[in-house]
Length: 221
Image (spheres, rainbow, N blue to C red):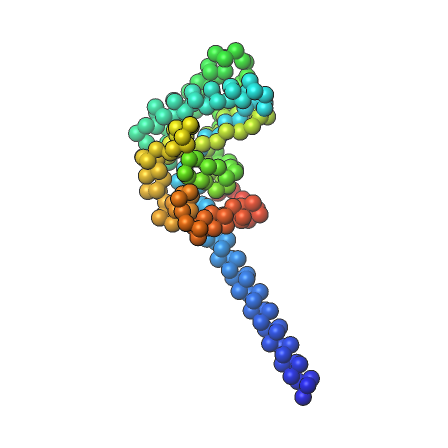
């Protein structure tokens, strides 16, 4: 009788372990699916700028910011009437030559002779904060600008909606930019990237970061 009871007890424990593992796996699959969907929706809603300096010297880093400012001023001018990300990318693609010429002109005017490589594509980005908006790490469509050897620190921002054009001293993102981004996302997705979110929503942002850093969401879109 004792052996039978032990056997039944062990069977119940085994079943509980199996059910617990199945529940864990189901939860993980659901969490990964959710994170992938949200990450994809967010990345599909923005067009970013990625500027890489020639080196990490103070001079090259300063030059990087001057090139950035010149490119942003031009992008702001030609895309001021854009209402969608696709429209912004199309205009940027049509003016890719002009972007390179502006970058080269800025570099030469500062007394340097670095070459510039301009490329529009889908690139990997780390988690970045723009005022009270935070974008999770992942792959995003972007205009990438490589100055000279492109061996220095990076600079990132969002060209559409224009989160680049923030008041650097105050870190305030224009309301119009946030409205454009909010219109492209669901209420929950926008809440996830807003720093004003509650603890539960911030946990979901951390979930995105966890799966991205673990390599489960790093597949190129």
